[in-house]
Amino acid sequence: MIPDKAQHFYGSAMVNEFSKQLPLPGIDILGPILSLTAGFMWETYQDQKGIGFSQRDLAADAMGIAASQLSSEHMSFWLDYSTTEQVIMFKVAMRLND
Image 1 (tube, rainbow, N blue to C red):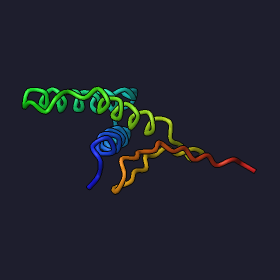
Image 2: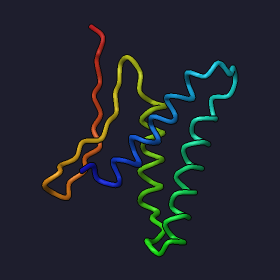
Image 3: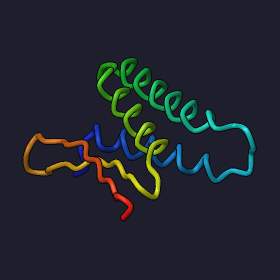
Image 4: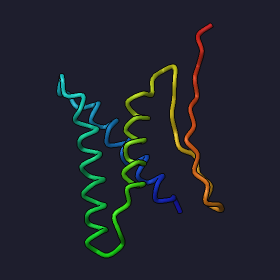
């Protein structure tokens, strides 16, 4: 099972990447707004259901957005996690030009 924080990270990154593909010039902020709004609404829903509002989940949403915004052909950001341990790692890979 995918950890909750990883779901938030990758879900926000996917929403942001999808919004980049929309033919709407000059609306670079659309993806981050949609991702954070969806994350906030989900946390509010969970709070009303008695599960609780998680600021850490919103932080994972923000990290997913940042990873999506900053990734390029020279640099990649991703989250790695263990399904057997409570370990989540944020990783960066950089390709240096020769």
